[in-house]
Image (tube, rainbow, N blue to C red):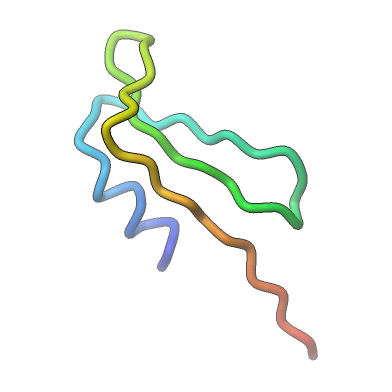
Length: 51
């Protein structure tokens, strides 16, 4: 759900994911002609559920 919200909010040809580890936040930015579009960034926070 949250990933889909970020991807539909970016008005670009493709999206770029920037992340370091699975437990750290990821940043999604749009890409146009191989160049990052910095006008909009979406921060995707990981959620850990205990079971």
